[in-house]
Image 1 (cartoon, one colour):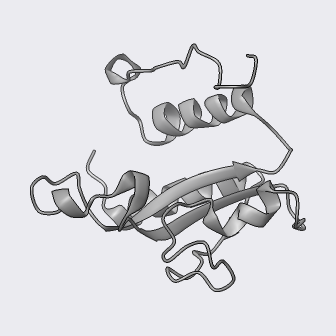
Image 2 (cartoon, one colour; image 1 turned 180 degrees about the vertical axis):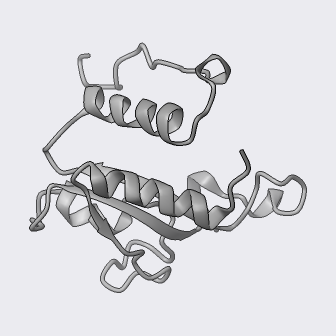
Length: 140
């Protein structure tokens, strides 16, 4: 089955909305109130203050299609733009977020259900990885 980008975005957002997530529109590519960012470079940028505990929203689950630009730092794609179809500087990042409502187990269940039951991907063609080490300095 072939889907357009618009169809993928709609199916993703509709799925998470049906699962109790608030669909939040993309924040501006040029962040309004964050002097630490030149551009929005990740879907979670607009939730930074929530994750830091400085802000509380009226919802605990969100889904977005965030317009992003990668133009420097750890994920600098500028040197690779045009060399492959994977390296772009402007893209949309689909994301689902929980602010203390669910964690890994539920996130994995949502991802599986979306990929296999909604997008109809063949599970035999999916590859999974697990990070087995602890975080530096975490004692885990």
